[in-house]
Length: 470
Image (tube, rainbow, N blue to C red; front, top):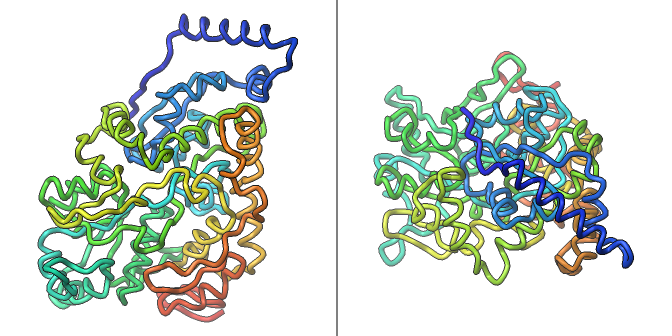
């Protein structure tokens, strides 16, 4: 299903191009700014970008609504996509010029897990933004084991409190089913991480069994984000991991309880990226820098002045052509709070981060983390050397392109020099703010993998549904 939105008419386009031409002529004697110079050389002006109905598509919506794409000479159509697979396939076959993507999609495609294609990203769209929700019935059992203070559950809530519920279901011969949005989604890896940290095995993949349910105690399967609440309400799944607004939707509908956010699983974790094919990037280098500039400006707008623009952003995102959920539902997480049980609304100012903490910079170490989780659960079948992780990260994540766009914005007076990590080598310092307190160092992926009690380790593979050493 496609939904085209907000495409400029040809007459408006012609007028805008004419205005740009006048502007170029007027500045000819005093020198062109970097943005105008790039606009003069754009390889492609009319672009079509895809997205899924989630609040973290906000940089695309804001870049459109605030005219940042037009400022770069770009005339953009935004199209809702039915699911993540359709979105990726349409970027690969050229129907879309680029898209709001799961961070694991460019990596998975590039290494050939699923569809084989070289996809890159010059821009990370946000940090955090996901949650894990369980049905009311599961929560009623689960919360008996959760510590309370002042009559409310103590957060973060680990999966060890879900474990007795899962064990009871299994003892009664009932599979404990949970939903996630795509095999290489952040949601799959975050849900697996949370379950495993609580002693619940989420299952392995193998070259002959791509269900991801080998040895699983909780059975994970794919459900498109907007369908999560209804699928849980129907009893097909007992919980899910998804982005907003679909956790808060469960609260508003009275059908489930978000028990933890991904901020509490991994503080300030990278979420979506903007993905394009390597071929498209090579053919349209100036256009790529221009669109990256527009999205950086959108991210700045979303976070500036302590989130002063969030209320306006919520109004925009609630429109049917974007997320299309009730404004109140979107505001519940986009404006600095998060509601767990009905009425238990708590401050969570960093639930959605779009620019702060260098959120838009595509760190190699972020890519390495996703690759470690692919290896941990068998999507990468065999042990790879540390150097391989770095090589793939550099092949897919392109901070060089990001910094080129950032430099142009600074030179144009549209961004501050101090807001960008010019001197980083692309690797964050080791991070330890995970729910299991295991430290992640992106330079040492195999040591990281070997530190987990549950998951494949160096030299291990899945063979005939068993973990064996090579």
